[in-house]
Image (tube, rainbow, N blue to C red):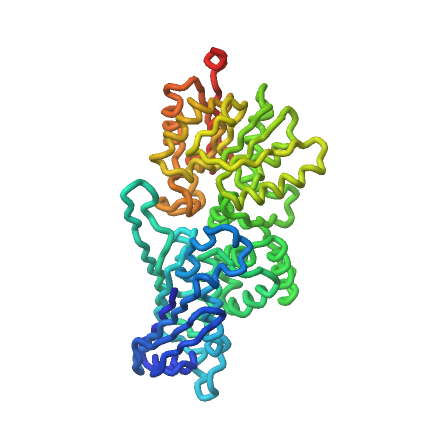
Length: 487
């Protein structure tokens, strides 16, 4: 993980005084358990380049982790990627430049815009390239993005989410570093520490002079603060400080933010603020999926026994638990961590006399389990896109020929709608998606899956419809034909 800061032109060497780092010595310190080094690779009066690199201790990264029982905690990218961890490591070493307080003789250079080139990476981001560019271009930078192509001998993902970013433009050293330390965690979208009101001060200090007018301000604030209550408090306190009575936007209508809202619930949960002044708050897309699935189930003559495959943290299963006519729900999930969260959620249902308690079950679509055979309803809500395409046909064949549910409900993203979200056509909505299909592709696959099985299929859309693009989620309802089932 590194940042390279390069200045060119007359007096470029002055950045050494703004950084308070001797160009002829290597800076080598331990900061918060990581080794931070800074070295000038080039230094003249017309060109200066400094590389800032951090090397954390991989064991320290997971020490005292709440997931210490799980060996997979050691399998992560935090040791390598430029993230909030990296920003924390290097912040203390850049204190003079960030505060704009060099020695008095050089104070006048704090506000001097240098011809800068800033490169950093690798950074793992779920944002499409167009949004990455949209974060930096309004600040006066030309943006270049490099990303490797993953070379697999089998079908998986051939487009890496990891990128190296290079910014070129005229900017003061102070502003450039502040912008990076605020926006790199926005790109990575993962905070390694508890997010509290202390983040307000960071937003104001590092965002001073550019954040209030940034076209993606809402995205930056939401991915920095993450939680609805903190976003509201920040906006309210920000309004109070400036003495204005501006409306607080709690749900932006920009497609960029819409794209981030449509996250798979198993992988990422984020509170979505509501828009002030509306009597009917906007319903999250994931909630619309749950409602659509439950609407289908309510109309079924047989719905006593349900299997929720890939149930994650049990949100859908918990909602179905209070529906009339349901006698048992099997919440099947391969992740132990998600299962623990699901069990905590199911335990809260005990206070409701009208609720059944779903049965959490460790399982996978790749392993047949006789216990799940012949149930009334089987659900795959936003699951199939996380399965490699070359393995999916076998999974679906097992479901329709072995499990033989009365009704199978499958939901998956509609790739055509990504254009409404302004997502690059080569991008996927989530980093773990193996594919996303158009409506015609999904229909073709559904028909293939039941070509030799006694099922009929009906296709529907979920979410706001846009002419020419359909709806953000597509749903298939497979119904097992009665005469075949009885035979």
